[in-house]
Structures are given as C-alpha cells and as structure tokens.
Length: 82
Length: 258
Image (cartoon, rainbow over all chains, first blue to last red):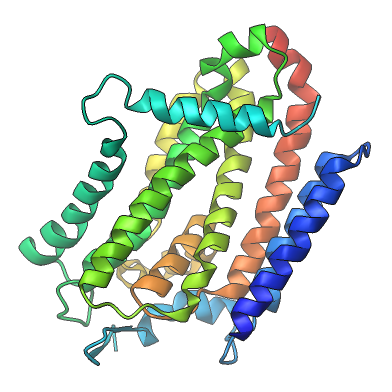
C-alpha cells in the first residue's frame, strides 16, 4: 500500500511539472524536461519504500540468483542455486 | 517548432502499426499471434519438451519464465535501437516535405514498440495466471523499468540515427553490436555459468541490470536491484543529454544531407 501511494504521488507530481514546463516557452525547455525526467526516475529507484533493508549494489547484482526463489500458489517454494 | 509534436507522433504511430500488417487477412490479429507463438516456444518447447532447467531446480516452468521475462523486454529494446538507427533515412520523404521535429520520429518508434511489448506482456500474464503463478508485489515497478529501458534505447537510437545519416555503415555496425550485446547479457543463460571475471564486468552492462530486474520480479519473486537501477538511470540521462546535444549541433546538417 505504501509503495503504491509513493509511486502514485511521485508520478502525479512529475506529470504536473512536466506539462507546466511543456506549456512554458523557456529557452532550454528540452534540457529542463530531461533533468526533470532524471529526477523523476532516479527518485523512484532511490526513495522506493522497500519492505526489507536493501543490500549493497555489487553484492545485490552478482549474488541475487543464489538466494532467490520461485513461489507458486500451491505453496511450493523452489530454491534456486541453493 | 516544438521538440515534441504529440499529434504528429500519435498519427505516425497509428500509421506505422497499421502498415505493419497491411494487406494481410488477419490484420492486427498478428500482433497477438506472434507473442503467443514466441511464448509457446519459450515455455513449452524449451521448458517442457527440450527439458531446459534453471540450475538447482526441477521445476518445468522456471526456465521458460526466466527466458520470457528476459526476451520480451530485450526484443522491444533491440527493435527500438535497430529501427531508430535508420529512422531519419527511412523517413526522409517526410523530412524533406514537412518541417517536422526529428526526435518525434524516434519517439513514434518507441511508442510502436511499446504497443508490441504491452501485448506480449498481456499474453505472458495470461499464461502465468493459467499456471496458478503467484505475482510478486514488485510487479508495479514494471512500467518504470520499461520506461528506463526505452529511454536508454532512445539515447542510443538518437546517437546512431545521427551518425547513420553521415556514415551508412552505422546501421550494420549497430546490428552486429546488438547481437554481441545480446549474448553478453545473461538472458538465455544464468550469470553463474560465466567465469568470475566476466561476472564482475557484468555490473557495467546496463542491459544486464535492467533484464535482471525483470527476471528477479518474474522468476525469482524478488525486488529488482534498486541501487543499480538508480545508477543506470543517471548514466542513461547523461547519454541522452549528450546524444541530444550532438543532435542539436548537427540538426541543420542532417536536414541538408537528407
């Protein structure tokens, strides 16, 4: 619920800002839109409310499969590479 | 002239999609048939008939899900770059007649590939639902992941499209480069089978970070590597700003050349 609320509010805010800048006739409008887009997308990945503490970048990208699992509704959990 | 001409983008996207299946009896039904056939190959042929398995699991569907969750976004990514590279040359009849915004020609390709991606994903979701698959809550990040991947494709596409106007070999070079990039990214295999030194180098491959995010959501029931995606977002925007600056600098020459 917290994740949905965050994504909805963050996206809504930037859509309003995007159209505000688009309507204005600034000299560097395209660059302003690109920077706005950068703040929007990087903000999502930086501030996303994860339910568990995240691990470091290198460990996370290299060892992800070792601890991951596949869940199906019939409650069968298959550990991969474990 | 506006950088983004929305009515023009929507008009050529509609025309592009209509032209793709023009003259065929089944028409736009082909847009659904292709993803169904592809997913049938990934899940049924590879998973059940050929018996391909992910390491450490005997589940028959795991490899099919892993493969489909990587190949569907890669297909959109690669097609966007390939088509963008020759966009200015292919549409020179429009550019020479109408004073149109050139970036709009690349954005319409992005939109057109998005339609194909959405159809493929819908078919994939349907197959997973039939298999009684339990969707992870990180699924809501898919649109943002896709947006990031297509921004990266737009940045590379804009760069190669500009170069392709002056050096026609760029189209072929892009094709070769994409082929090598595909096999260097763990999409059909898992990263663990690679030598350790290559595994370490993989973190510098933005496509790996993005594709791995999809695989984590669908096949590993996990959250994507958000810190890595944050870095990819910054790198993508730096590349996009750089490509756009080069384009703005050469825009007049591109129009003269065409």
